[in-house]
Image (cartoon, rainbow, N blue to C red; front, side):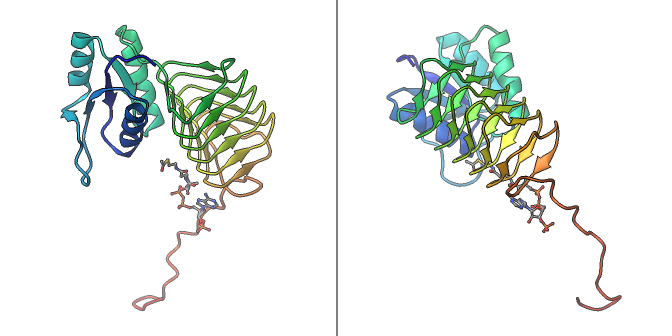
Length: 221
Ligand SMILES: CC(=O)SCCNC(=O)CCNC(=O)[C@H](O)C(C)(C)COP(=O)(O)OP(=O)(O)OC[C@H]1O[C@@H](n2cnc3c(N)ncnc32)[C@H](O)[C@@H]1OP(=O)(O)O
């Protein structure tokens, strides 16, 4: 990363983490953009929306980091930045370790204490969240979120837009499809098809919840 200033697109919880990472690494963050949730006020200018952010980035030659939790929205914004010829380089926390022989796409964010191993490829808009690990030889699709403490073991692959929940593990060489949700703490031992949700150890499809109303008529359960 260079000394150029940054604008962070997003103003929610994930944006707080990304701003923190940039500032700890000694970078100037000029502003965030979007709807800030209630709570601790921002110490930075909050731009009304992404258009205002694009204009500021263009006018001042700043760098952009997209810090939005939704995988689809984050991917869209990174694509738009790149299409406009704006700079969205990877953001890597000072305490993270990223192997020189890994490949990080545009708009990738690697948060504190995370690790990306050698010969791994991360697509655009991937988040490797706090203390998450992407081991060697992994393939991580566009817009994937590897949540805090999750681990992709050697040679694992994850398809576009998938969430690997906090503390989950994907075993070596196992492939997880696109648009999958891997529940927090799951251990993925076998291939997961596109669009599935899996939980538990070994990871499985959660049982359909019984939504029938079993209360006696007119009475409390
Ligand atoms: C910085 C940050 O905070 S990044 C945040 C990253 N986010 C995460 O890691 C969260 C990942 N999300 C989860 O684990 C969620 O619980 C999901 C997506 C798996 C399921 O969420 P929902 O669709 O809302 O399902 P819901 O909560 O209704 O649970 C459905 C069933 O699965 C069970 N279940 C839900 N999550 C899990 C889990 N992680 N492991 C085991 N069982 C689970 C529930 O107990 C419930 O079982 P029941 O029907 O027998 O009561």
